[in-house]
Length: 141
Image (cartoon, rainbow, N blue to C red):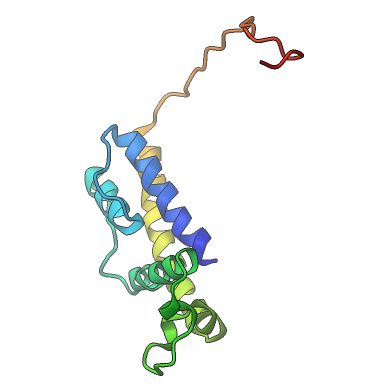
């Protein structure tokens, strides 16, 4: 749930980047989406409670993909939520995802409206057939 949510943000930012034609400078999912929405004059909805859902998912995703001693086990009762397993077992994971989902829906609704308003013509792909490989498949080098 967490990894896919963050990946969805990354893919949305990448789609916006391609459409804007300008390379994004930011490297984090949150930063890239902020930059991409600004380039296209779309609302980022950072002021909504749902955005805080994204802010809560990001460090959990980092802890999942980059395990360290402090995010695998946490003896400090004030930092228990830095451990993804504890965070998932509590209700915080579902609550954060619900907030994120609401926020992401706002952003993607605006993105879909933006695409519809652009009214781009369909893309035509030209395929070239008949290209032959130069290496013999049966005789490896």
